Amino acid sequence: MRKTKSLIFEIGKAGRCAVDLPTCDVPEEEITTLIPQEFLRKNPAALPEVSQLDLMRHYTQLSQRNFGVDSGFYPLGSCTMKYNPKVNEDIARYPGFALIHPLQQPETVQGALELLYDMEQYLAEISGMDAVTMQPVAGAHGELVGLKLIRAYHRHRGERRNKVIVPDSAHGTNPASAAVCGLEIVEIKSNPDGSINLDALRAVVGPDTAALMLTNPSTLGLFETKIEEIAAIVHEAGGLLYYDGANANAIMGIVRPGDMGFDVVHFNLHKTFSTPHGGGGPGSGPVGVKSSLIPFLPTPVLTFNGTSYGLDHDRPQSIGKVHSFYGNFGVIVRAYAYIRALGPDGLRQASEDAVLNANYCLSQLRQQYHAPFTRFCMHECILTSKEQTQHGVRTLDIAKRLLDYGYHPPTIYFPMIVEEALMIEPTDTESKETLDEFIAVMRKIAQEVKEDSTQIKSAPHTTVVGRLDETMAARKPVVRWKG
Ligand SMILES: *Cc1c(COP(=O)(O)O)cnc(C)c1O
Image 1: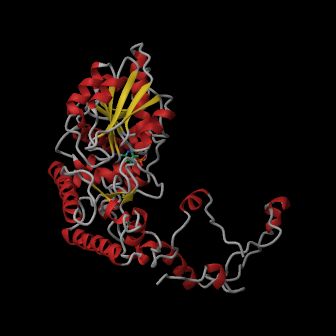
Image 2: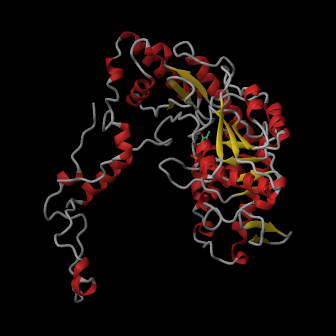
Image 3: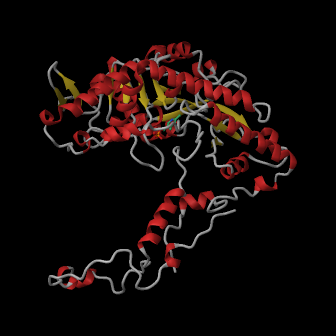
């Protein structure tokens, strides 16, 4: 049953009030003397007048309309919606972190600078890079910063390289970042097995190649085994390799982008290192580089002279600042807490569990859903609704039906080179029992498709609203009540 509820405007009653304040016992200043007439409302705001309990229920129910990893399984591929341990929140709220100001003198915030400095070291170690900047605040922002670094590197060497090679499986932010950076995008087609086509790569590299942007494991959840050969092809042509680290949850402590031949990498702390994400909130996209790119890093650069930490603004070759202050500090504190809690063995274990969980889902569902790739997957697996489309049911319908069973749907229709894709990323934090329940529901839906798909095609039935016009909902949201 769809849960319908009156809007707060509809339950409002004139004169009802959530808080009773005592009458004011000092003379009240006339509002008209404080605010110029022209700025005053002509009519009072049409706010609902409700009791405190109604008000409380209104906001509590609104909060329950949201779906988060704290409310249920969230296998949204490529997004790594793993659980964010609550201790990370406690630590980010320590007054020593939460109440300092970014304009304080470095001598007074040594602990915070030490934390940032340590994070740079940890991420450099995990990625096999020589230096890291914590300043970028999202994966896409990291891409832009990384490409600016690459551009600065080539310019410094007096080379005019303006082409960025991107495989057709790439996340949309890769070509978008290249375009924003003023670079030209050259797309290469993947092999049928999802890997990079080396001949296609050889055919496009040349003296104008600035970089190849690659995600490994790829957005198909597959590890690019020929990565060393790929790196050699690009390097021989004078280009650099950019690593989109959104899928780093599969490789922590196992293999390092720096060792694979990458020159620049971004991390998504809000994916791999268990900090909150979704809803456009603050993220963090640190960028790591090999030594040849260090001179170009954004300012300020953190320094440590053996006794104290500082900020170096005097970097003549730097690409400059890319964000206010030093990035999203609160997010970085959460990721720091996560890394410290797990340690090197724990991080490796997390990646191993993530890969195991994805392969378990793949193996348990490939009877019911078509699996386009035969290899073992990494931390996420791709299925399609090829079988189901024969019964007139599309991937979108399956995603909507999952909502009725209380699950956030997997990523759908991405990567775009896989038709009717369902991209499941169970993450490392889910138990086998949770995966088994999800698998049972996915199988049940596959059964429903065969027997009677009417419930699926009209799903969801249990949510506050049913199927939205998704384009209109995004482009022209109606967020205002009109009585
Ligand atoms: C999430 C993601 C990005 C972009 O990261 P944001 O932090 O959302 O900007 C880039 N590439 C891939 C493969 C991703 O999954």
